[in-house]
Length: 460
Ligand code: URP
Ligand code: ZN
Ligand code: ZN
Image 1 (cartoon, helix red, strand yellow):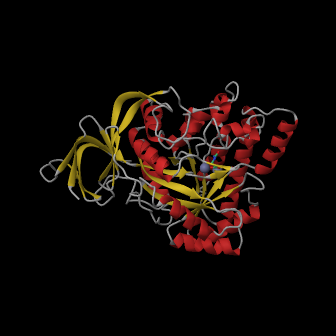
Image 2 (cartoon, helix red, strand yellow):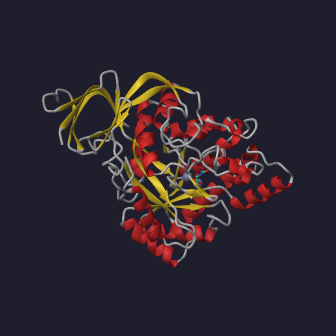
Image 3 (cartoon, protein in one colour):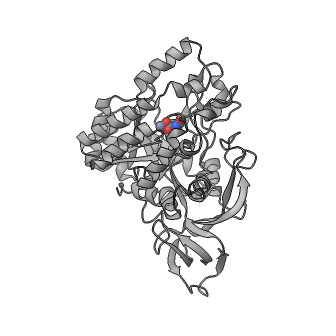
């Protein structure tokens, strides 16, 4: 494979910003510095551009089964959209069917992803029953590079596990080195509220949010951290949405307890007002935990600045508005939960985070690439631009304005949560392991070229 020189850009990592060229040989970066010209057969002109690590989105759901349907992006469309958006690695959640072994679910996920993926990918495994077999399977999966496991404190009768099961899984992870990830909402009382609201005829989408109060996310987050502390392990809270949950994480971290958490763009840029849009439009914004009142957003930005929140992932789980979200007309509890987002994260965080003054550029890189790589066992192969690391690189045009829209996005879903929002920033050239995936508005990546990443244990 030819040597490539990315010339004349501003290279940004989590710790440095410098005018430098990047020399790529084969799949790896071999040098970052000046006067590297003359050594390359291919030149990418990065004048006026930011040269940043490819994004790592550690929370996606491709073709995920939910409430009798499936999320509409598969590994082909979802990873192409990721590449368009500057994300070169995803970590997707494999879902066992009821009673299926974790090993069998992992095999199915490998079969879904391998022929289709345009970008590199890893898996987390969802655990819906904790028993001797699943605990033994967790050990083997860690050895196979699936080193993180999600358990649910919500969705009774479907995914929810009790505290004893959580504690057993956490205790096992203290032996096998896995990272336990939690969907932290207290599903019991939430379910009682849902039944009460439906009985009272309160069936519109906004009631999805009203029946899942932030206090129940705060309570579950607090309990999760206490259980993890008892088991002597770190815990990672997925899709943290509220000040209540953030306070639980912050309090634990201040006391020296290993609590980790991600938030998602929808909690930073959208609110319960979107869920309350007139008619049935609010269904587009149904996800769990739900969108919160706007006041939570400032708290989440504080958390991102102070490192009480370590990264931003998307929880990309798209369902079409027309065919799928409509399943909940007249009953908000039947609206499939989840939003599209894998394509928009990088630019939204740049535009709404860096340009708007919420975070600096190095922190941006840390949130979208470096911290995900470190926490999920991919660093330093991924998540930075340095000699020896994979040449997963975004040449980012920071100035060009565009409008986010379903008519121009590449996700296989019939709406955009950010329809009409003007942003600045375009991932102009996107490389993975030295190969150009996207070049000035052309997708060059092929399905199947993404590779499975056997991840190490978390580098907490
Ligand atoms: O609403 C959501 N978040 N859907 C995806 C599944 C999950 O809980 O992450
Ligand atoms: Zn979840
Ligand atoms: Zn999710």
